[in-house]
Image (cartoon, rainbow, N blue to C red; front, side, top):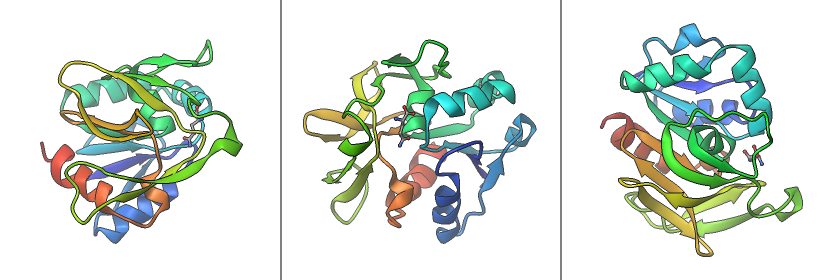
Length: 192
Ligand code: GLN
């Protein structure tokens, strides 16, 4: 199984390390040509406006959409969730999304950097109890389209969802050293 991590900006190293801990060597994707033989792509957290700019510069938009159409699964964490959403609220005017997942995401929904927090989440389909969610200037998922499954919520807002081979988490599972959501992505979402 070949899993790529978009390595333009943000927490891509931590995703690579978590994959490594699960025995999967991640591909640090810096050019669209590297998408070719991937079964899955992780778009990390960071700053969605910065990642969006770099994705434009390196011409990632159409290749990612095409490879997704040809079967490449995608998981967006935090900024990555913003980048895969069909609709983004409170986006910057020039910020473009891939628009592949039928969710509406509100950027910086919890407030500013100082409003970052951690919370225990009841995350569907993963074993062994709650998952510690690290929320850093996080978005939340405001609405789900048809066929999108809610996987976790916090304080009345959806913070994780899945639509077929697409996964979105508003928080950062790669920063906790707990590989259960990575395992879920590999075993359930990529394998689907
Ligand atoms: N607030 C950031 C954005 O809009 C996301 C933060 C994160 O990825 N931790 O892109």
